[in-house]
Every structure is written in structure tokens, then in C-alpha cells.
Length: 299
Image 1 (spheres, one colour):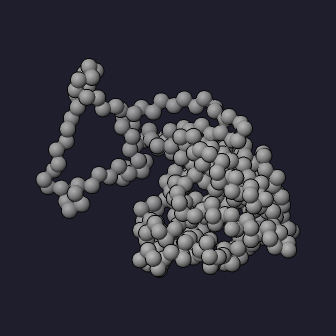
Image 2 (cartoon, one colour; image 1 turned 180 degrees about the horizontal axis):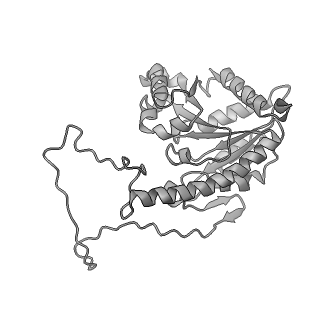
Image 3 (tube, helix red, strand yellow; image 1 turned 30 degrees about the horizontal axis):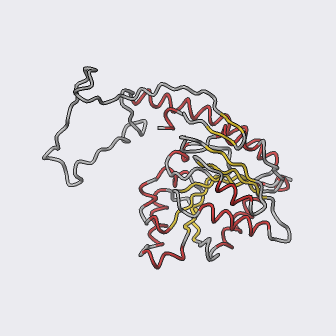
């Protein structure tokens, strides 16, 4: 419940960043009858009158959108508001810095295995191979390892790895520390590759210009409907691995339909990072956004 409790220690390469955030989580524990604590265990039997959905349990229909044992919906909303307000303060500082430098910052979000890092590598190679190469820097978020940052550095682009430990997303404070280590150039692009997770990153503003959600065709047409918050927060959705579509019995048009059911304003691009199909449209989108972010655009 990271949106609620706000916990998770991050570590930048060569820099332990534990802030000692101790949070009482108030999690109720269910104890067995022989543990000696006196807690009575109630076993709920299936309701024969349950509907055709098998009596599905819904824990996200309250005003807070989530349930935690022992906490009221009002208290959950209060905690979440406090956590996000603090994060938004850091995000505002990041946004002012990036705007002053004329750097386009994009928050790349996806499930694990969507091809996010491969797409990023191909994108960096394309942007830096031009006669008028565009500066690219990267912040890599993962729970552990620097594998992805190593792949990015192999392209020649500066990258800072942020390991979140048990944390399931980057936050604006982590990004602020990473920005201090990057050579940001006016007119350049900063890619923030978030932890592979389509839930928690939706709620956390990092100071980016836009969230870009990457969705692999292998994930199925209903992924936007299962994880609506992320796709509602994204300005662009990239349907990746289109070269695999004929082998997955997937309907690309239905993916787009479901994306727009969640977010009618979302832009959608189809591409294959492996074959290069559709990459030109993605690069054109990046160029247009980078030009708008450039200091020259304001003159």
C-alpha cells in the first residue's frame, strides 16, 4: 500500500539513501487458535446466494479507493493526501528545474517485460545517431541491480540507477537526487524509466512533462481495463511488440478501443522496437515535444 503509507527506502548507485522513515502500518494480524494471544479467528463460509461472479470481493469501491484493516476511509484519504502533497512539492521543484533548462522529461511506465528498456535503447541510438544529435539522459528505476542502467550506458547516454528496495515505484524525491548527478542539456530529453508496475507509479508525479505507458501485445487487449489508473494518467500509450501480434491472436484495434474507454484523450502509437516498425512516428512525437520544451520555444 505504498500510496497510503509512503514507505520504501531508495538507494542511488554508491549512495545509501535510507531516511529512517518509520511508519506504523496498523496491519491487523490473523492469529491461529493455538498461538496464545486470545484472538478469535472467524472463518467465513461461502454464501450459497453468491452471484455468477463467484462472490467476487471488491476492496476498492470506498471513497479512498482502497481498504486497509483497522483504518477508516477518511483516515486513508488523509494519509494519502499527506503523502502525495509532500511528493508533489518535490515534483514541483523538479519541474521548475527541467523547465528552466528546457529539458523534456518523460516518465516511462509499464508492466515488467513490456520491452521498455529495449525500446529506450533503440530510441537513444536513433536520437544520438542523427547529424544534429539530441542530448539524452536517463534515470533507471528498479528494485534491485543496475542491469538496465548498464544497458543504457552502453549506448553512450549518461544514466543513474535508482534502486527502490521494497519500494514499487519512483517518487519525486528520488528523482531529485538523481537529477543532481546528470549532465542535463537544453533541448535534451530525460527519460525516467520507472519500476515495472502499472499501479503505484500512476499516483506519483515526478516532475515529468508526460507519462508514457508502454503496453506489449503479449499482455492482452484488456490490460487497460484491468489497470485503468495508469492509462488514465498517461498522455501517450505505446503498443509495443507489434511484430508478435500475428502469433498472439491479439486484436490491436481492440487494445486501442480499450485504451480510449479509459482515457478518451490518450494518444496511441503502434511499434516494434525489435523490427523498427513504427519507430519514426515515435521519434517524430519526441521531436515535437522536445521542441515545445526547448527554451527557444518561449522566445
